[in-house]
Length: 353
Ligand code: 13P
Ligand code: SF4
Image (cartoon, rainbow, N blue to C red; front, top):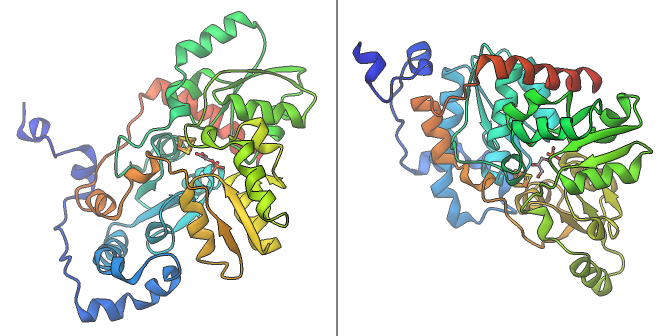
């Protein structure tokens, strides 16, 4: 066996793109000046005392991604210094999937969770796709396996299976078509059948059922962040300020959605705030998203019932820099699984053009 095959850090990505040196991470007066424009973008949500810890990484990442011909895709739940200062594309799961399909970069660094990086790899099989922390998972993705989907099919023969993108490639491979929170109702209705199996999010399934005549057979997965919100806490917020706008993600329980003035994907929620500029708003979703929108909408006051996604929060600037320097951690998918999973993601992308 050759040395290359046994050395732990010599991955396919390293062989293909080569190793680089770790840049200098000193915070100097010159660096403060050079990054001042980036700080301006986040100054309302990042205290000045935190900037010296972020700025050297921001400069290093922005330089290295050009040298590597890499793009950084960042989900709306990334923290502001990632979302506003180093990302090339930001968005909800559907937008990130579409960007992954069209980029001509050599490397994609997915700042989000594992299923998002897998989706990027499915749509860009020839590219090197990296995730800064392999442990960035998702409670929905962990709630179901490919064998569970096969059992559902046996229990309901002939009923097509729609899977929310928040699942593994192995689960996507067992389904007919994928969807995200931005297009779930449209995808379910596109099948033209009276009944569908919808996995893995029980609450998103309930929301879809409330918007369509198609009968929905749901799995029992839940998002550990959104299931914590309650209708009671939102009623309490509205009691204090009856004018407050409540906007919620459809992964929330039905009693939460019943209180909402608007329900939509993360980007749908952001657009609602930007377009309507409410005086006061509660974004009933992961906490960092309010910071990201607040940085761009100074006239809007945010009430923050702050639930953080522990998986999304694993993605940090130091880990993103490590990803670009050492090309880790590379996403690989079994070719047989990938072929079937890709078909279900591509059907979705095609339908949402
Ligand atoms: P979006 O597709 O709306 O961005 O949602 C992804 C997600 O993980 C929400 O918890
Ligand atoms: Fe998964 Fe919920 Fe985290 Fe989104 S917020 S990644 S659905 S656990």
